[in-house]
Image 1: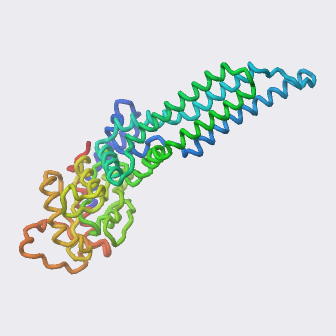
Image 2: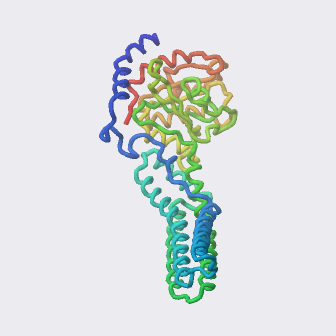
Length: 398
């Protein structure tokens, strides 16, 4: 049966092969941020404060070394005349150049990060935009600084640094002492160091932001997506491993899926992805206000990613108190009421275990046409894979 289905895919395989061999044009590419996800992982990185200041210090040191070498060369050319030609005008010019270099060493990386975040956040995929918003609201609830505030502080740091060093350069142009010029340079670096350190908390938020999004998978919006949803510890991660190339963490405690993991089902001939399988954090039957940001992440994935929903149930009673059969059925009813118009498939996991009896009042909530599978002994897995292949043409893409 599976071979018959795969043969029926031959026209699609050939078309995909032609697309792979055809020269790409800009018209063929999806609009930036509107196609595949992954833009959050491309957010610009900001160097640690000590590295930022250390890089500036090295540039200034290299400038002083170049001057020393130039003076040595001039001394040799003058046949040992130790006086050289470096008087006040040359020292003033050198110090002003160092102040400008110090300014660019600090303000340029800040500008790249601020501008980069501005561009990226405007062109995010709707799913990733929701992820960003959830992250900000979660940080603020925990008392942390928001990303917007951190970027505002970084912009002020850039402005304050540029202004302070511009004023120092203007002051250097009026100084009539080489000693005072060197003292001004030392004082200016100390001032910049203090300015940067005073914004360390804000800069830390910007540095941590891309790392905190590392658990979000990269989604190809042109490949059909199957999203596995259900309560905590019901076996979603095990199913991703059984159905695809994904290798999510599997453990026996609530909210094992701390982020989201992605696997792919590959066409056996050309090995292109026929569809992608995405795991998601578990849901509990509670109001939207009571849900944590991981639960909201699951709902965002359903809302913003065109996909088929695979709802996973565990009727064995081994998923913990928070994921009782009653609780799982309430979650399924809520999601089916909201997203029942989507392609939908029900799967009962851990079917090698004896199911608990379901109370008469909840019998009507049981899905009538569910697949019964077990990842521990592969019961029903091949049948589920075959059924999913027939569903592929009906899984929506963007």
